[in-house]
Every structure is written in structure tokens, then in C-alpha cells.
Image (cartoon, rainbow, N blue to C red; front, top):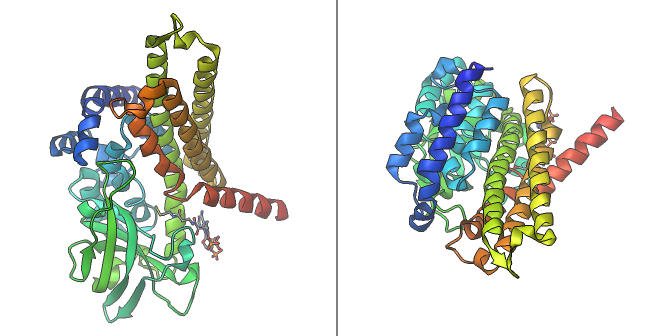
Length: 384
Ligand code: COS
């Protein structure tokens, strides 16, 4: 445990109160305005949320994976856009530096990431490289004490706010696959970096995503993560393994909220002279959602504990992301169904959540990529 048990319980209670009192009442407003207000970002900063997973030595709280997922179960009982504010700082943006960075890189970046003074994004996806991440084309060509970066990164979460990027680029263009890829920490203000317009999305308003374009951007040679060329794809995959447990936990938090909304609506709404919660067909939907959310929560806690114990968790991480993201899709669908016509009306939060959760089955590896990773690892294990 990074925190003693009492302190951690108090922390979870604080998060729950923050979600109930500050985030849930503001959900509709942030969806409408497509922005999380600066005062809420400030409160998140004061709670230490930007540094949840950054080691204490670099100014964070240094939660274990088991602790992190429990925080996410609480923090994500609200619009996923709030989690997105801190998501890249505690997840895919920072963890390449935590896992593989040099001491100098950790000292230079992690304290600012942990305090929220710096927002960092993860730049892997490209216009022609999504699921097939190893085919990325952005190049980083050595020129004296610099690398010159050229290419476009697509759908980069938090890029409109980012002061830095964990960037995957090809340092050896003669190699086509994963082996020619390196990871860099790139300062966002460097000449040669420009941003596309933020995309208009189906859901998760308040979370922002855009393209990042590199044109002859000169990055100091010591920006390469860990100081080693051509091992960046592995860094990216390790970051995504961890990220997949994280997204699974986010899905559980959202599912819990959808179940709360479904249950309270079903207990309130009367038809045929009775609460609809007393109808067995509605009960079946409630029960299926409860059972599936519990299953997802249990597998995520198990995968997190295994990761903390140092086990290889690539298969388990994909199982978590796959099952939990599909689960929350079904839970959201049932929530709309239980709400009937009201579920289709934006006054009720389930309509918004229904759109919000669709992304979970796509980003940080589609459901089909998770299936592929799981099955491939099964075959590898069986073949020895
Ligand atoms: N941890 C550490 N190393 C890993 C790894 C993991 N989980 N997965 C793969 N690697 C290593 C492999 O060991 C291999 O190295 P060696 O050649 O030295 O053995 C290298 O990385 C390449 O792996 P592989 O051959 O499996 O790569 P593939 O091109 O076949 O693709 C998938 C692997 C499909 C799993 C990968 O491209 C992927 O995850 N795609 C989805 C990308 C994604 O999630 N995008 C979302 C947007 S980013 S938020």
C-alpha cells in the first residue's frame, strides 16, 4: 500500500463526496458548454488527482494499481469527461516516463505532471495507423544533437491543453514494424508543432481531442525516453497494458452510476398501478447489470493485484478492458430501456451516458484488438 489503510479510506470518502457535491451537479453544464470549468480543475488539482499514480519521490501520491482502480471506481460515478481532465497525466501520458524514463527525465517532467501544472498527452495513433500501431509513419531522424520530427498524430486526447507529449516516432525508417519505433518526451511549445481543430464528438463533451502535426520539429536528442532508440513500441505497449486496466475501472465507475440511476427511476416510476421496479422483466435488467458490473469489478481488482505483485498482465489487462467496456455498453443500453421514453430525452443523464460510454469499446485498443491480444497470448502460452 502506498497509503496506510485509514488514510486511503478517508481519501476514497473525500472523492465520493467531491463527486456527489461538485461533479454530478455540474455534469449537464459541462456537457452543454463542452468545458470543465477552471474552478473544478483547480479543485481536482488541490485533491492531488493529477498525481495519483506519479511516485511520491516526484511529487505524486504514488498509488498502487489496486488503489488506483478503487479511486477510479469512485471518481467515475459521473461524466467520463471529468476523468479525462486528469486521465492522460495519471495514465498513458505519464507512465512511459515512470516506467522507462531516465532519472533526469523523471525529475524534469513528473513533478509538473503530478501537480497538474503540465498536461501531457500520449501521441501514438496516426491517420493511417490505429489498431495497427506498429505501422506508424511519423519519423524522428537524428541530426547532430537533435531529432527532426515529421508526421501527424490523430485523435490525441487532451492535446488542445497539453504542454508535452509522449510521442512514438520511427527513428529507423528502414525497419517497417515495431522495432524501428522510439518514444520521446516532446515539449508542446517547440517550433514545428501545430494543432488541428478540436473534433466534435458523439459524447464525452468537456473532454477534448485533436490532431497534432509535426513539421521539421527539432527535439533535443536527450528527449528519447530512457535514452534508448528503437524500444519505444514496447514502452507504448506496457503503457497500454496498464491503461487497459485503468479504462476497465473507469467503465465500472460509470456502470455503478447507471445502475443507481436505473434503480432509482424504476423505484419511482409507476405503471399499471405499480412501481416498474416490481415488474420481473425490469428486475431482470437490473439484476443483469448488477451481476455484470460486479464481475468486471472483481476481474479488475484481480488484474490490479497481479500487476502490483509483478506478474505479467497483458492478457488480463485486455480481458478487463474488453469485458468492462462491453459491459458498460450493455448497462447503458438497459438504463435507457428502463427509463423508457425518458431515457431518450437529454434531461435524464442516461441519455448522455449512453453516448459517452460508446468510446470505451474503441479507444486504447478496440474490443477486437483486445480479443486478438487475448487469443494470441493463449496460443503462445499453449505452444510454449
Ligand atoms: N508488453 C511489452 N512488450 C510488448 C507487448 C506488451 N504488452 N506487446 C507486444 N510487445 C512487444 C513484442 O514482444 C514485440 O517485441 P519483440 O519483437 O522484441 O518480441 C514488439 O512489441 C512487437 O509486438 P507484436 O509483434 O506483437 O506487434 P504487432 O504489430 O503484431 O501488434 C498489437 C500488436 C496489435 C497488440 C498492437 O499494435 C496494439 O495494441 N494495437 C492497438 C493500439 C491501440 O491500443 N491503440 C489505441 C490508441 S493509443 S490510446
